[in-house]
Image (cartoon, rainbow over all chains, first blue to last red; front, side, top):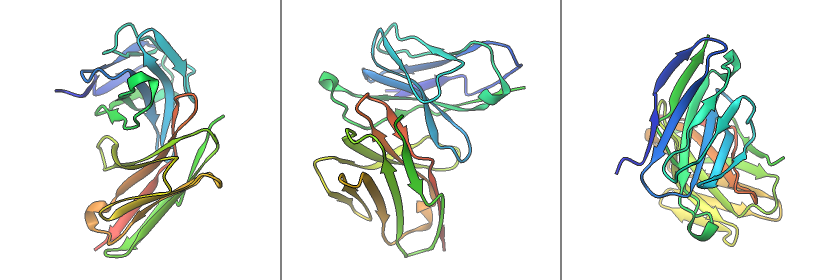
Length: 116
Length: 111
């Protein structure tokens, strides 16, 4: 049981490049989300999904796209990387039987992205 | 939009003393309030949580209280130990299934 797996763990991009951060979970969780963590600003929600085929915007969605074609995967796409997107990104999932949130978010190990 | 405030941003206590971290939230329909601990270089992990139908919950040395009328909740750690040193985040599940985190409190326990 791997839990939540994020790849890559480290990435360096040049301004304007695009890339995808991968997130997969093997716990059959319906709820998945992406956060970015910057010093002094906590965890800020980028996008989230309550099930396959459903996505919604969080607090800081600009510059990022997501899709949820399967229950297991929730990739985060950076369309045209900017230095302001330098951050640590966390994917998280949660079990929501019948749409009721059970609460606990299970986090991946994080992906450290640097945009030059 | 939804917002969670957290105070203090840094907290330093002597080993054995108590630590208290306070949070306020804006969405009155929020019904679930977890607390996460993040050690340096690690992922956040749940340490305790409370639902809106409960006023207080305790788990060994940690406890959480909730005041729904005032829209604030607090984390209490008693008999602090050096291994309690970490960043602590409060969070609120909003009525739109967004989980909004506070900015974090860096707790240092001095031996």
